[in-house]
Length: 112
Length: 114
Image 1: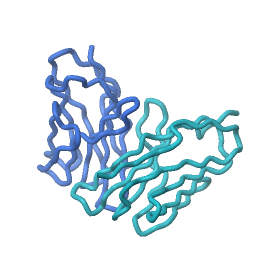
Image 2: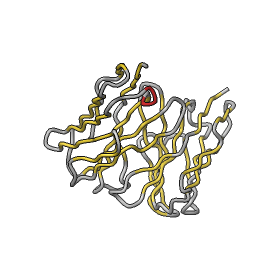
Image 3: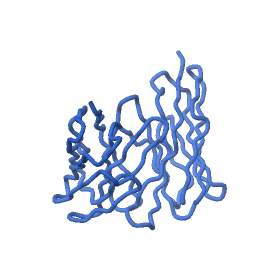
Image 4: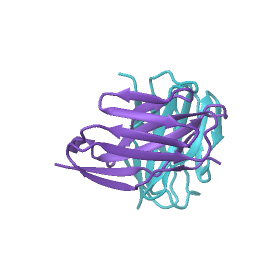
């Protein structure tokens, strides 16, 4: 079955530590996205990539970094510069405009 | 800047009643609208996609309409069941802008009581 796989499901980060969230898709979609979800604030776009080796900042990119070396993969690194990283992170992908989005099951990141 | 609003934020209905969920937006331009369902602690599941040139989509007990002139979309769920309890999100994608990014509403949390 085609879909998006996010791992891990739960992640704990210590102060000052960088962590990487994995996102893999086998849908052959060109575009991939990272969203952050906080209670009471809805979903906000962190980064997106339309093609391999290219990505753009979203609305809240500070403290995050991404790479897109393969079409199937779009990992997100939460750096120590992100002061409030505790949130639910969702990865998504889409075909060219008009065909809608598919989302992964999410990673819950907690700072300990 | 596109703004998407969902009212009410929460809704409770008895089983069997029809659900009507509202989504309003400020810029109708060239947008696709997608309705999602989210269960607690889970990702988003796509329910219906209405392309910019369409006025409605149907899937089983679900029907979604799009009225660009008034900046509104409505999701109807017929004969609600306890399994329909979830948060429902609408989102608009500007298909002419770079990135085809989604702008989300805040969601409506639905509880269907047995």
